Image (cartoon, rainbow, N blue to C red; front, side):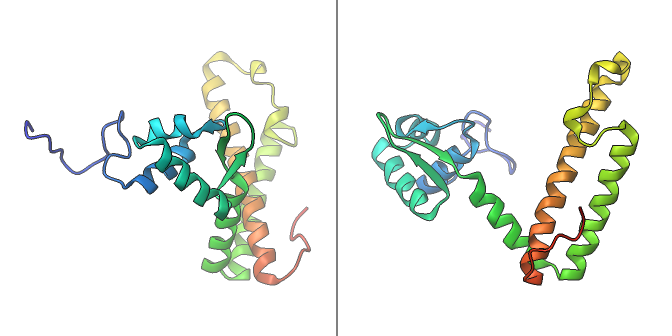
Amino acid sequence: MTDGSRPDGPPPFERPFEDEDTKQRVYGAVLHAREPMTATELAERADCSEASARTHLSFYADLGIVIRHEGRPVRYERNDDYFEWRRVNQLAQENTVDELQARVSELTEQVEAYRDQYGVDSPAEVDVLEFDAARVDDVYSELGDWATVIEERRLHERARRKVAGSTAPSHS
């Protein structure tokens, strides 16, 4: 592939947004940021001018996709609440109340199974050092899965309430 083309597949790691327009690259840069960043830093990641980055960041801030932190310099970060809201709305649109209730029940059963297995109420209460060294990686993986199940249950419950027009929880 000496002509610079590449086969179908992901872009090179060092240029993950290569085939996207500036707006998409800025969006991607914000999504991948782990902490608030300046427009200059995001422009570098998005491979665009600082002025273009500021324009798109302002647009995303107006939509609530990013949070603008005033100061010198101004910093931007992704608004996790926005993405959670989108996920809840997506679940509410794609599922009936009964489907959401069934999923909440399944996830609740999984949470209870983890509680029984580890003898505690949440993954944060598990002391990994109590486990055999050969099992530590598996325990960390299970704790991550448990945390994910808790989060998914919370999102599905919010969607169920939205569809049902209720704020009453289905499980405690």
